[in-house]
Length: 186
Image 1 (cartoon, helix red, strand yellow):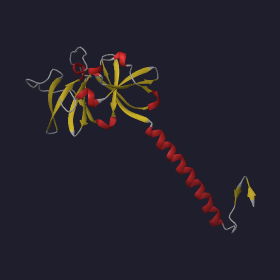
Image 2 (cartoon, rainbow, N blue to C red; image 1 turned 120 degrees about the vertical axis):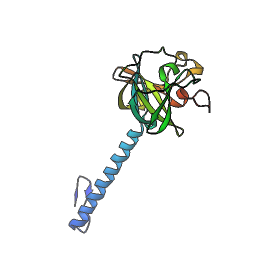
Image 3 (cartoon, rainbow, N blue to C red; image 1 turned 90 degrees about the vertical axis):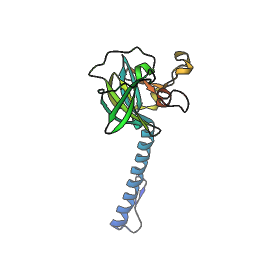
């Protein structure tokens, strides 16, 4: 018995027919799951934040938490881009002023400022930003490298620029933006 190139089992038993259709449904589901997994791999998950009028993003996998920017204790002799340290649940965490680190002019402290706590190479540190925007998924296909003419070689902290709904999101490479030189930390 044939119909639409589907062949029923010779036994004609309901359980054999059901098993055949269940196998087909399972194969289709597996194919859909594999396709969805591949599509998910092509997405980057970012935490986006503001520095001035520009929007930046970092890989969400590095972000531990986001907290209000308060009670930062200055440390004498720290590099200019290190605003100080905070006590986060008993752990002392250095806080990098990302504006200063990226060569941007400083601003007055505001209520919108946040500290994005990241974990880099088993070291936790905070990034002081003007405000956190959102968490989003962005397709790898809309991320482009920044032209080398737009940045200096010694300050190449940018992993790419994402184009999303008329916005440009500058994606930072935390390894390059938070570490002074290869292998040397803050």
